[in-house]
Amino acid sequence: MAYFFQYLIYGLQLGSVYALLALGYTMVYGIVGMINFAHGDFLMIGALGTYFIARAFEGFQVNSAFPMLIVGIIIIVAMVGTGAIATGVEAIAYRPLRNKPRMIALITAVGVSMFLENFPRALPFIGPNPRSFPTLFRGKSLNVFGATITTTQIIMILLAVITMLLLYLVVNRTKIGSQMRAVSMDKDAASLMGININRVISITFFIGGALAAVSGICYASAYPQVDVYMGSWLGNMSFVSAVLGGIGDIRGAMLGGFILGIAQIFATAINSTFGYAVGFIILIVILLVRPAGIMGKLVVEKV
Picture 1 (cartoon, rainbow, N blue to C red):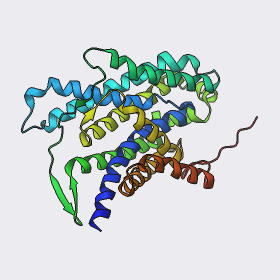
Picture 2 (cartoon, rainbow, N blue to C red):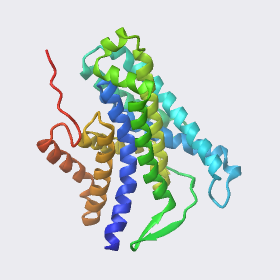
Picture 3 (cartoon, rainbow, N blue to C red):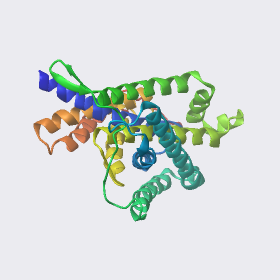
Picture 4 (cartoon, rainbow, N blue to C red):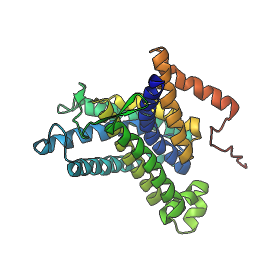
């Protein structure tokens, strides 16, 4: 039973990373109607950015960990920076293609992803080699039902849940949230009602990029190594999580992330080579039963 709870903790830890990243996928798809395959690379940008920002604060380290105030500043700066880059990518690469066929935007997203992975790799101060991620959180261990859980894992899980709740409140209880929902339903009608479409979509990308940065920080804190390709695999798994839960639904993205994370950990415990495949197996099974995902709804388009 202790092993079960230990694997469950690891699954929730990995699932929180998938869930935070899947929120960005589902927001962009729900509002813009496109799959941003470069979204996983924002996780890498957030993690690498945090690494370099943390190096600037190395003199403030206390017992191999940063004081919480400094950690808060580092995370906020990384979130804002990554959100700004995501907004810039939308304005430069995606906005001119907004009224073009979706396949063109999809191919562009793949190209943007390749650029974001290989451009930093070519920079001499970054390069292709992995880097050790600094310790941001003080590590303390607790014993729960015979399993060990660290403060870092608790922070990751709570951060994912709190972020989902805040995002859900923003979308459903604020003015910008109502504008987002209006744009997702009908862009032309929303524009006629005086809503600035470009502003709403830019804010959506900013929020998605900021969440990806948090996801990258969480992942690098649990698995302390960062490199330019780390967002590729995590991005794929988070996209599977979003589709699994019902892409376009915030609650579905969270649910899909945790389901996939837990399933992968338990599958890896059985067979180390089975962990990667189990996500796609679950996705196929779910889509055969519910084509729109667990919490998604089928939409009939009138032509």
